[in-house]
Image 1 (tube, rainbow, N blue to C red):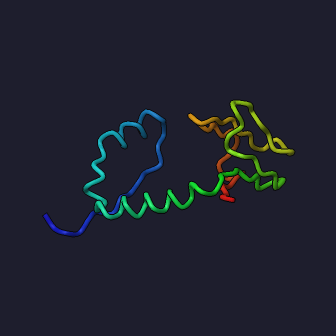
Image 2: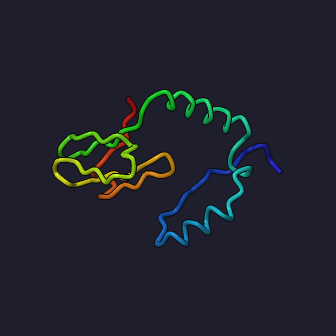
Length: 102
């Protein structure tokens, strides 16, 4: 086996079941070195000090990720966030919001 790792190509999925099956069969060791995960861990640790918000690209509203299980909409109602310490649910089109760290 060569020292070169494969490029990971993630396809567009037609269903959640197909996406779940793709990730279940994937062996990340074929694509990443152990040091890559350490870099990711350090990056995530740095971001953990900041707080995550979802910013509506239409009206500019920023919604904090942890809404304590209350659906919170932006002013123009293009996006809504429902989140707690266990999950974050985002309502709206993917292009209508961006994740920002403060």
